[in-house]
Amino acid sequence: MRYRKIDPRIWNDERVRDFTDDGKLAFLFLLTHPAMTAVGAMRGTLSGLAAELRWPVKRLERALGPAIEAGMVEANAGASYIGLRRFLRYNHPESPNVARAWASALELVPECPERHALVARCRENLRPGPFREAFEEGLAEAFGEAFGEAKRHPSPNPEPEPEPEQEQKQEQEQEGSPLPPLIQPMASNGDERHTARRVRL
Image 1 (cartoon, rainbow, N blue to C red):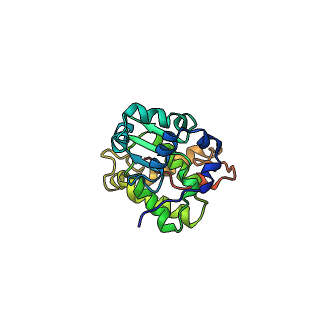
Image 2: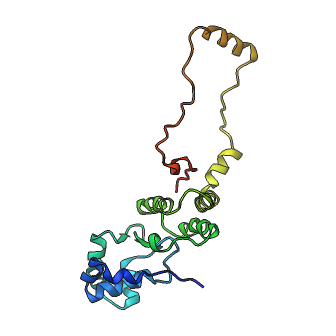
Image 3: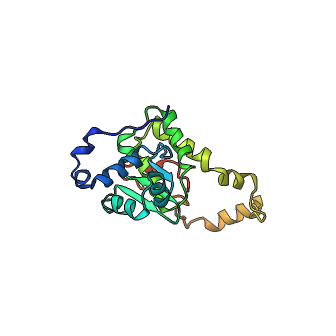
């Protein structure tokens, strides 16, 4: 059974109180829409949502205008993307398996700058540990095919490995002039998020 959480304190939010009646209905319609994924975003357009409500498009645009201006609702018409920026704050995963399923939900969301920001929000809402690891594993499974292809199909013109005699000659030439290490240790800023696998979506 699919469900999502709506905090009753929504009615204490000054911005929500200032919405028109149409604005409140439209915002709740988005929160509870059947196509809304577990990560708080969906493929859709305002014109399509207006048709579902049997409203003119202008009516829905006016209704959601304040929520969009406040950053509560994201809409990218060109990508057919609609998202709720604070959705994850109230819909934390209840198990690592649910966190892994977030990656599957992202597959249903159109690729656009807003989806890249959404992936960052997913990571921000998952503390380092089993939940974050499950999410990263799900991302690798859902979007990591390109990396797998690179491993199966190496570069057609790989650099030839130096002969042992050539290596020895290079080492002798370099004696007395120490070289800097090839790999510099990554600076630590105390944020473990940056050590997680990065998967380009």
